[in-house]
Image (cartoon, rainbow, N blue to C red; front, side, top):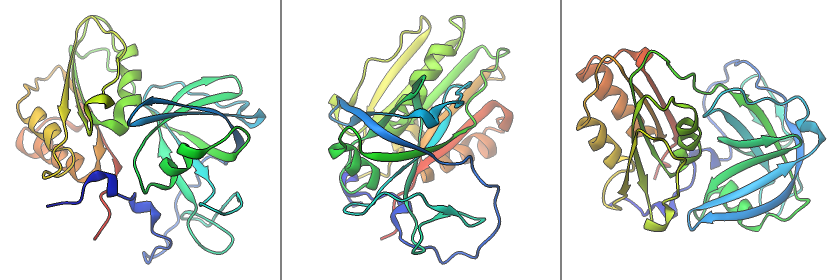
Length: 270
């Protein structure tokens, strides 16, 4: 039996990496901000609004984009890390508490981010106790989704971490397109009222602790008709997303250009 998800820790919580260093493109610079307020959206989702003048010039032109959120480790002073050509590192060589999220809304000097509530996650724990004025920073944005106007149908699959992105996609997919939404949640009260789309069908799947994360999403896509006019967008636990890629690309020969499949998090190694 796998551990319950409340015990999961994001894989990035490992303090150091033994992987060989390789140069990567430097991400957008970190923008120093502060918490403005927080608000629970559900028993499983915390909304955090951050702000500051350094948001000047930030643009979010695409839905389902990403930003990196930096917060201090518990009990430590906030510190901006340095890019070493491969990753951000703190002055003592440790990795910072830095995670990737979907930016929900940008309004001038205010940015809204929704964070899944679970014990043991560096950012999730921070969000539960963050107070107005607490320091943080963001880097981004990362590329979002471009809606394919030639499609006639979208299939959206995700776990709770994908809810903010799926909400945005529902707002921009044309009303003429059929949309099938499948969402896996840990608790019935994690279900949220999604943006209305006249041609959308939404199915909420309960997660089962004895099954790997994303199992219901794998079943959903296996039972879904995927035609040449179908576009698939999926995000969630990395192993389940890889299984969906394998199913679509190898078993169904779905064109890769007809899909966007993103691993948002990993189950940590024992």
